Structure formats: structure tokens, C-alpha cells
Image (cartoon, rainbow, N blue to C red; front, side, top):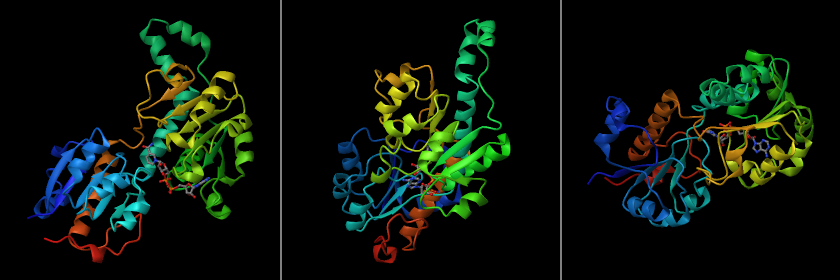
Length: 333
Ligand code: NAD
């Protein structure tokens, strides 16, 4: 019997893959199954007899891993693998891979989109035009220029670096960067000036967050940090919701500690209908779609399919997030 590959919670029509040689190769090596699980219990049920799971944001918890005795690989269809218990997977000798690199461009473009949308009040302008209040919006003024402003980038990895380079090149922004793990010369080579977190928060007109979610970055931007920002400043978050303390952000936006926010990610996705953020006019939100361009989605699928084929052939997949020896994990045919 062929091994089984589960495509879980990644939304992309498989019709678009039908002509992809990698997908066809996978179909020749394995049986495939597709699902968007609505609960942990449902995922446990559907993962029970699979060797490989390609996943989006479903929590891959110890319970899910325990429910899948044949599992050899969890391929994350994205960069941030905070939804996967990598330590437990490693203990269970399950490989975990992610797809770094592919998303830097689209997420950086989306970050600039949010910056521009907030700076130029795009959402409000559109709504004024549609509700026949053309002149009313013009009399309010159309926001502020990005040119010459200071952008503070927290987390100067693949996405943070790309944001900095684009903001510098396209808008002539000054860049301050805080990233304890990146050497100062590397920051300077990518259009940035190294800064402490305090300095960055105090001097930036826009602060953009690009760190992975992990215990050390949970709540990294909280009340203390928001109070350090300029009252005219804008906060952008395209990383993970829990990197910001959302209650503190609500206070900051309603008390005038900062002027506005642009958010692609939230603590709870989708948010509760009663969430205060949904009611604030100085917040612009997108539904965690920074990376959902046609090109990036295709590249993610193909990378995960490539990792699956590697493991099915007993080869080492690219970008393992844990360090198992995949040759010890050849899928029995
Ligand atoms: P990356 O690993 O290349 O860069 C992350 C950087 O954060 C690293 O340079 C690291 O040194 C730095 N960092 C870690 N802890 C820090 C701290 N406490 N303070 C400051 N810097 C710290 O990752 P990336 O590809 O740039 O992606 C960053 C994050 O963006 C991902 O982990 C993911 O959560 C998020 N992301 C979101 C979307 C989306 O759709 N909105 C898409 C892709 C990635």
C-alpha cells in the first residue's frame, strides 16, 4: 500500500497543481487526502494513518502527534512554525520542515501596503467616496508622507530586512533596526542603523514587527513599549498576534499613546465579534493574508510537496526545523 500524505488546512485549489510535475510525482508515490479540520479531535481522526502531513495553522499538539503513530514528517506550509510542538515532534522522531525565504517578498510588500494604507487613510477614503462624502474626506486631509520618516524594524531577519530595503529605496525612509541576533554590520549593509529597542520605539514614526513567536517574544510589545512610542507613531504587525499585548494595544490606541495600527495578525484569528479592535477607526486590518499571493502560495505548496517527496525517497528534506536523521525515517513502501 502506498504511504499517505495529508494536506491539512492549506487553502489552494488542487486543480492549480494538476500540471505541476512535482505534484504528479507525489501522486505517483503516495495517496493524498485533503481536509480543513475544525477541531483538534477532527485532526487527530484524519491524521491517524498518515505518514506525512502538510499543514497550515492547525495546532500540531502532543495529542495530535500521539494520534499519528505512522507520522514521519510535518511540513509547515509557511515560515513561522509556532503552531507545531517541534520539541515533542523531535522526541517522537517526526521531522518538521518549514519554507523560509519564499514569503519575505510578499510579506514585505504587505507591510508596506499597511504602512501606506494607514498613512494615507486608504480605508476611510474609500468609504467616504462610496457614501457620497467626497468633499468631506478632502477637507480632512489625506494623512502624511512616508518620505523622510523613520521606520523602526523589530526583528531584522528575511522579512524585516526586505521591508527595510523597500522602505529605504521606495520612500527614502531612515531605518532603525533592533535584532540582538544580527551583527551591526549586517544591519548597516541592509540599509539599517542598529538601535536598542528603547531607542527604536522612542525615535520611530512607524514601528514594524517581524520576530518569530516564541516564549521570549510573546508580549514583546506591551504597555511599557507602547508608552515609549511617539503619540503620532503607527504600529504595524505582520508577524504573529501574540507578539503584541493586544489589551495594551487597545489602551494605546484609545488613550492616544500612539496614533494608529496596521495589523495582519491578531491574538485570536478570526477575532471575537465583540473585539474592541474591530470598532476602532484608527486600526486597519487584513485577515492574515500577507503571504497569500498567488505566487507565494504556489511556491509554498511546491516546497512542501518537494519536502514530502524527499522524505518518501528517504532523502533529507530542505529546511528541517528539527535535527533528526531522515535516513533513519524512510517510509516503508
Ligand atoms: P527570520 O527567522 O528570517 O527572522 C526573524 C528575526 O527575528 C531573526 O533575525 C531573529 O534574530 C529576530 N529575533 C528573534 N527574537 C528577537 C527578539 N526578541 N527581538 C528582536 N529580534 C528578534 O523570519 P522571517 O522570515 O523574517 O519571518 C518572521 C516572522 O514573520 C515569522 O516567524 C512568522 O511568524 C511571521 N510571518 C508572518 C506571515 C504572515 O502571513 N503575516 C508570513 C510569513 C511569516
